[in-house]
Length: 386
Image (cartoon, rainbow, N blue to C red):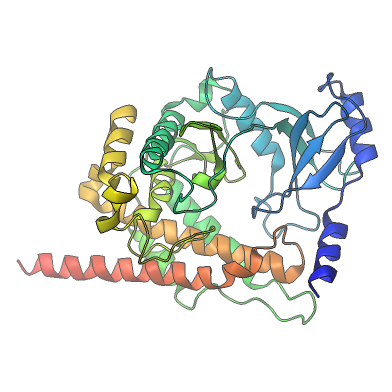
C-alpha cells in the first residue's frame, strides 16, 4: 500500500526536466545554468509544490510551482505574487530572502506556472521545540526571528515595488469575509473516491467569525508574511541567526498583528503544534516553568524587542482588546487553512505526505478560539459588576 501511494505521488508531481531546462536556458534569465537539469520534490511543506533544481555543474536552485488541478480558491497558489514580493524584498540591502531568477506563467512547460529562486544553504528548524539547538542558540534564534519580523514590518511597500500588493485598511474585516468564503468553498469539496462533501470546519465556525467582525483591531498596515514560523526560516549553517525567509504564498499588505501573533503562538497555553515536535505539550520548553532551563526567552522580552524596532507596542492598542482579537483570528485562520489541507487531500490535490495530520487541527483551533472568546466574555462580565 505504501509503495503504491509513493508511486502515485511521484506520477502526480514529476516534472519534465528536459522541457524545463530548455525553457530556462532560452529565457536567458539564468545565463550560468548548465544543462541537463534534474528536479526532485521536497516532501515537507503544505503549500505550493517545491523542488530542488540541480544543473549539470552541480549548482542547486529551488523551483516552486502552482499545484496541478483546479484551485479551490482563486486567491490560493499565486506563484506570481510570491515572485513579486521576493523580488521587491530582494532590493532591500541585506534583507534575508532568496534571490529570484525567473517567473514562468506558461503552463505548457511543466504543467503549471512556476518560478526559480536561489537555494540558501542553512538549517531549517522543523521541530517546534528546537531540540537540535543549545539553550543559548534557542534564545539567539528567537531574537533573530523577532528582529527580522520587525524589520519586515518596518519596510515601506510602496518604496520597493509593492504598490497595490494589498489593501492598507480593513484587514481583519476583509479577511474574515475571505476566510469565511474559502471555508464554505472547501466544505463543498467532494472526496475523489466516495463523492462525499468534506463539510464545515466546525459547527460553531461562524460564531468565531462573528466575534472577530464585531471586535476588529484598529487599522495598521505592513508587508506581512502570513506564515512566519521557524520552519519557514533558514538559519545560518553554524550560527543561530536568520539568513532567509521562505514560503511567501500567504504574503500581502495587512495588519502586522497577524504575523506577530502567529510568530509567538508556541507560547500560547492552548497552542497545538502543526509541525514536527519531539516533546509533549507537558514537556514543552515554552511552558513557563521550563523556559529558563531550555533557553526559550520570555514572550514579553520578544514583544518588547519587536516594539523597540517598529516604534510602537500593539499590545496596548485599544487597551489590549486588539491583541485578544488578533489571537482569536489567528485560530480562525489556522483552522481554515487546516480545513483547506483536508479539502486538497480528499480531492487528490495535496502536495504533502503530512496531510492526514491536519484533520484534527481544524477542530482544535476553532475550540481554542471559542475558549478564548468565553474567557473574554467572562472577564467583561466580572468587570461590569465592579
